[in-house]
Amino acid sequence: MNVLGVQTSPWALVAFLLYVIMMVAVGLITTHFSSRGIGEFFLGGRKMKSFVVALSAVTSGRSAWLLIGVSGMAFTRGVSAVWSVVGYVLVELFMFVFAGKRLRYFTGKKGDITIPDYMESRFDDQRHLLRLVSLIPILIFMTAYVSAQFSAGGKSLSASFNVTHQQGILITAGIVIFYTVLGGFLAVCLTDMLQGIFMIFALMILPIIAIVQFGGLAKLLSSLKDISPGYLDPLALSVGALIGFLGIGFGSPGNPHILNKYMSIENPEKLNQTGLIGTVWNVLMGWGYIFIGLAGRAIYQSAANLPSQDPENVYPLLGSEHLHPFLFGLTIAAIFAAIMSTASSQLLVASSAVVRDAYQKILAAGRQIPEKRLVWWSRLVTLLVSVIAIFLAAYGDKLIFYLVLFAWGGLGAAFGPAILLSLYWKRTTKEGAIAGILVGSVTEIVWYLIPSLRAAIAEYVPAFILSFIAVVVVSHFTRPPERAEEYLRYMKGQLE
Image 1 (cartoon, helix red, strand yellow):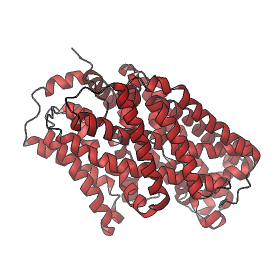
Image 2 (tube, rainbow, N blue to C red):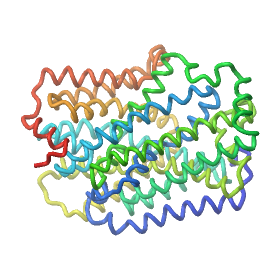
Image 3 (cartoon, rainbow, N blue to C red):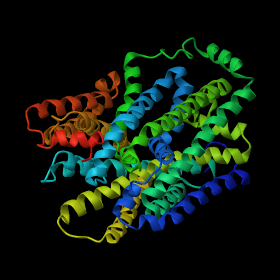
Image 4 (spheres, rainbow, N blue to C red):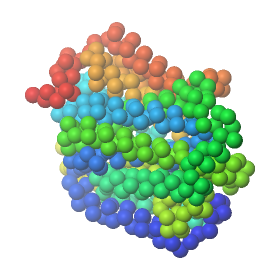
């Protein structure tokens, strides 16, 4: 059902189908490479180039919420919505240039494929406690995250083309499953790169055309100033809202589907260049989010004039009314790209938690398992996780909503402090990392469940801070690994 009132054009459908064909082709082309072994399937053999890593890292972290949500927020709040972009742009620049480089050097030296691999190696955890503690939130949050992306894909397709929500879920899932199961990490990175190009195209061209058709930037800003005196003021928000917006960046250091992109680059020294590319891409996308919302507000004046009176509908509506149908098809493909780039990366992380972290490293520890068998197990588990995600997307909306509220911030709070401290502070201990994971996860949930606390400040901010404190305090009272100084030298590129 076309809830946005968009007239489906053959040209829009052609544009969208061309996008789908490209994604399927990548899956077919990369099948042979991903079949070589589990390192290739989950990490691309650590042979990714700068441009691919840059676009894959930023697009996999930018789900449909940013494409649709930030535009809607800018429509409602005005220029102050820019702070929701600033936090993650700055944090991810730091991760590319500094922390990501250390992570890549260490994991390359130790042969680590997943974040639980890294945690176990960094703290010499022979009893697999860190791996077990890490596995559970990763598997739960990532499966829920994937299901939410499938649901968003279904909503996007049903809003733009004449299909039901359930049919849209199946179409979304089918495409993601196809190229992820066949092509693994390489397919995910290459499709992320292509999808990043789709996203940047839509986010650049749509606001520019809308502003030109409105009469120019000066006329647009004049119109927006008349709406509200503070609409164009970037500081027209409370301190709590500002901290909450900036705190979105706290999710980036702890989300495995972003961290594994840094681990995959062929040359760690290229991460400076990669960070520049990724940051430019992040800034351009952020500009697009904000100006789509601002242009939409000037044109439509009020949410009452939008379909379903929902500010988040401003992006597809603006595209349908101001672009040629073929270009509109590309803007819908951009929404789909944001959804699929996130879902495919998260699907691989969930699969790796089962095959690598649970099966190979715990249940079958000490056994020699052929690499190709592990790849086929990985494909099977990827398919199984996808089926669970499809079921949750179709029938468990409330459960998905509840879990996804914690996924980005929860993973950031659980793993971010432990990972950052482990990369820079030799006194970080296994017990401290476990405490940080538990405190971050519990704080995220409890804070959200208490309305008065949630109203004061977004839950992921105190969750991250308390997790950080927990790691430091517990580490002070426990013994660090004997090889901690040696490991920090690895992280600096001193690998011998």
